[in-house]
Amino acid sequence: MRIMGLDVGSRTVGVAVSDPFGWTAQGIEIIKINEEKEDFGIVRMSELVKAYEIEKFIVGLPKNMDSSIGPRAEASYRYGKLLEETYHLPVEYQDERLTTIQANRMLIEEGNTSRKKRKLVIDKLAAVMILQGYLDRQSNNN
Image (cartoon, rainbow, N blue to C red; front, side):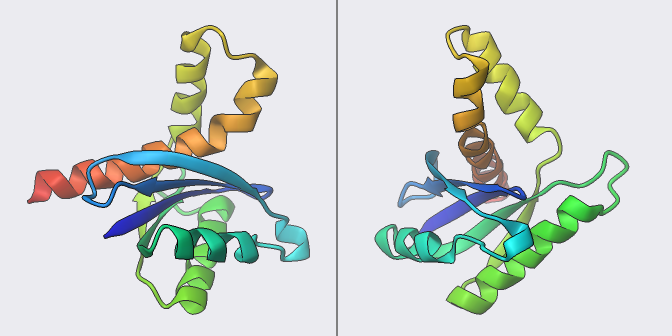
């Protein structure tokens, strides 16, 4: 069973998928979207869902630091609902507070990634962190 992890923003969605055993997450790509124009990248998402035989989605939920739900978390819930309605697959949410900041720090510490290059991969790396966090939690619960 392959699982897709998503880091949903207002302009991009970072995409990661699990290996078939559900042990590791690999970054796939960043899909450009436009919330204002209600362009959610569904055509490309459909191609990826089919190609990787996805059976479940894990959507990052950017809660506020006090655990409350703000506008970005509400947007993630809306995106998750769209996925459920479009693909008829289960959607779960993974707390993703600070994953983008952590991903950015990882790339900075790597030392050879310019700011411009970081912008091109940050959402994909955040999606990997979201999905890997979910996979790790599942393996610890079993």
